[in-house]
Length: 80
Image (cartoon, rainbow, N blue to C red; front, side):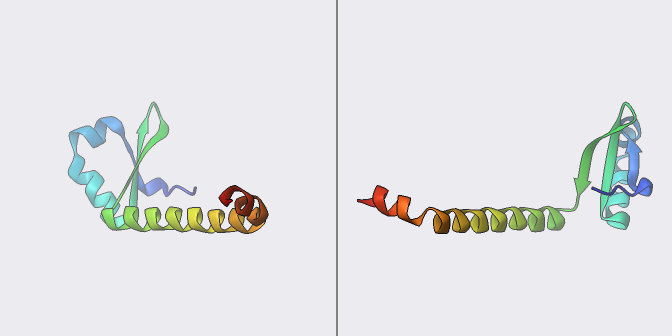
């Protein structure tokens, strides 16, 4: 994952000034909160989180569809 350095903020500053975190998300699409100078938390807008979840669901469906096609005979035997 590529991280925009302009969207990084320390956990101390995020704790003291959450409105700054919200502004970073509005401006850059996300904010990365650093703990001990390492990326620890990712804050995204609710709309973006919903679209990320949909993509994961689509991945699960495509994987399960592929597995069913690959193991069609086994599923047919199990169904008996």
